[in-house]
Image 1 (cartoon, helix red, strand yellow):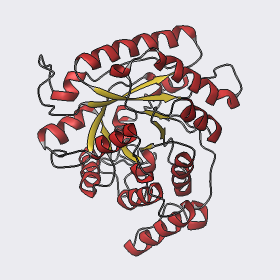
Image 2 (cartoon, rainbow, N blue to C red):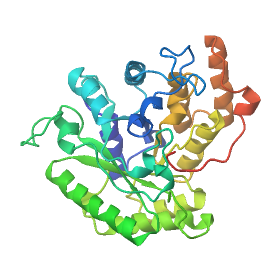
Image 3 (cartoon, one colour):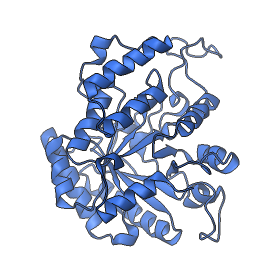
Image 4 (cartoon, rainbow, N blue to C red):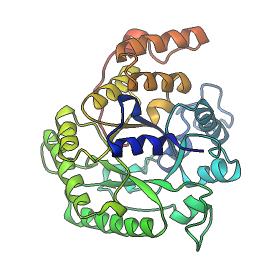
Length: 347
């Protein structure tokens, strides 16, 4: 079945895209970062009695069912998962075979997303690392023929975090170089995630947007069309830096990441503002997964992206949906209509 992602990107390349061609992705790859806590908190009693003071967490089967529900809803354009869950859902179940949604897998897991309980890795300079292999993402096993029909996914997320440290950034770029060569040889597509520095980079925070933009342009300047990412996933560092990058290269499809959960207005306003200033993709993970009703949440993301509703009205309408469903919101409406200051990094 034709995938909406390919259709929208095709129109963007042809210069015929409309405002409704904005791409929305649901990032359900958090198990490669948070481990057991990835599916989100369970509102019921702990099944095992372990760490009840800390909270209880949904199970992997519940997480997989959340992903299936998003695919059945058929609103988002991409669902990003871990390689192991891709095998279960795409290869074993064929979940995406008759769907217009494109499956993707996280192709690397740098150390700044190792957000395990008690860990300190995210506070140290990011180191590149890859658990998944491109063969296993595409086929579920080591393969010799990479022209064979894809069973899993031929699209992955590759992440890089520049820290302004020569040794770590040099290593990160060397590993990115090796990944691009392998991806091209194995007919594997990718989108590039670039985080803000996860440690003090030695300059004022207001310079972060310029630092990131320069690194993105510099990094991709030496990459020809065959090895370039389909689009970018990066923090929203404000309208100025986003507009600068978009205007520098109109052919570069720029997407923004969601960051921490925040309030509902945080999520809705972020999508609205990013699109207004040139973004053409939004990739939200925890903002969707930790919402009271992810399917309703996604519906309003789509309506905002399609310019059908403004963020404040969307928050009020979302709360009305929760009320009609008998679901208690995590915050009262007046609190959920507040914008909070969020740090735009993975954790």
